[in-house]
Amino acid sequence: MNHPHIAKVLDADATESGSPYFVMELVKGIPITEFCNQHKLNLSQKPPPAHVFEQVVVMAAEESGEYE
Image 1 (spheres, rainbow, N blue to C red):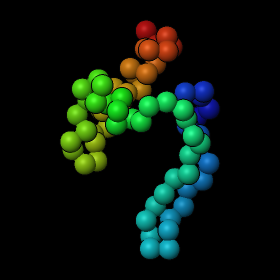
Image 2 (tube, rainbow, N blue to C red; image 1 turned 60 degrees about the vertical axis):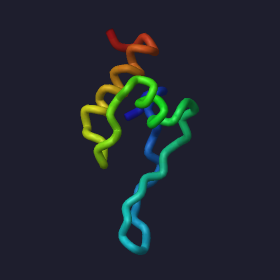
Image 3 (cartoon, rainbow, N blue to C red; image 1 turned 30 degrees about the vertical axis):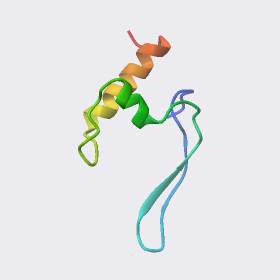
Image 4 (cartoon, one colour; image 1 turned 90 degrees about the vertical axis):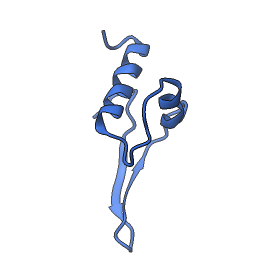
């Protein structure tokens, strides 16, 4: 995706031990965990359910005026 409010993936690979990783551009702002805490989104499940990320995207778009 190419959008000013979405971090670009710069690289993706796996470590020598097989753990996958992504290298993403830095997006200035508060950490997603802080955003979720401020908006009382549940992050207790590991990994957090997909609907939490959907809520974050919609809330961020609404706050920026890009989603109605």
